Length: 68
Image 1 (tube, rainbow, N blue to C red):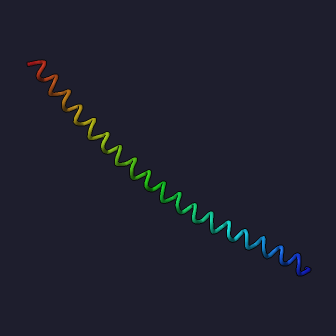
Image 2: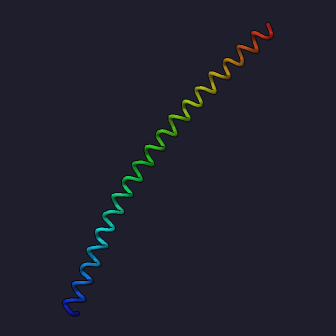
Image 3: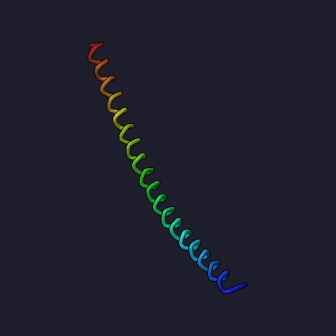
């Protein structure tokens, strides 16, 4: 293999290594973001469940007052 071809191949391999490193960093950021979204979703679902429970309790009390 000639020196020029070897140099070109070396540069391409270096480029691929850089691309892989960039993709690894991006993947880590995406995973962290996904974990954050999952956590926020769980919190919102819990709040929604609490609000639903409180609303149901209010409706029961209103119906009891109406029946009195």
